[in-house]
Picture 1 (spheres, rainbow, N blue to C red):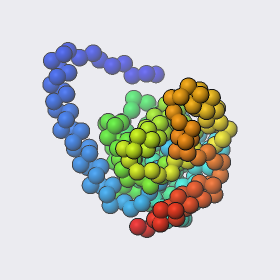
Picture 2 (cartoon, rainbow, N blue to C red):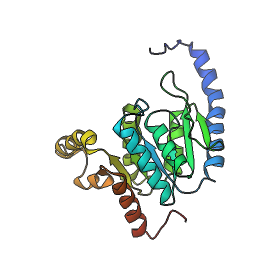
Picture 3 (cartoon, helix red, strand yellow):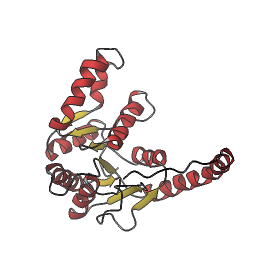
Picture 4 (cartoon, rainbow, N blue to C red):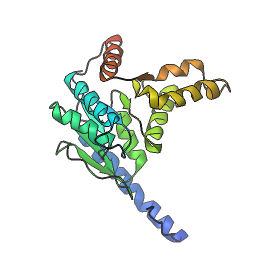
Length: 228
């Protein structure tokens, strides 16, 4: 059931906007202070609604475990579903497991596989997304809904417009992502809304090993490693 929003007066809105600035600043400061100490990590995105018996849940566990085995930590949105699977894989493999949780009227709650000192709570999506981009060395995007698509396209837009440095964006599940990729090719490129080379902003794979190969190849090319 969707949460109903109570409409506020214009004076209430103006007052709340002024005080919100300080809350936003506090979320940025708290996020920067805690995440600056976590070391190199890969963010894993995906649906909060994916059940533990689903093939993509187990694939996310495998992907996260291999990411940890190759020297990275894992950052997720901290909730259930694919996020839980990502943290679980990192936890099982003995690596850094970070959760950037956000308060929502449905779906979201902390999962039990986040390191005790590496769980952060946010009220604002835009602050949380800054943390994902600033403190991740790559994005692994599992099947998901609007939130997953939002995070995916924001990352690609920032790289496309040279607002941030290039890093690997890896879509996992050709069966799920194939239709979107076809639409990008047949509609966005054909209409001239993006360039053909923008397809190089992301990769589409089906296995945990493919994810690791892309991450390792990228950082080998730039002479970097997870331990920089």
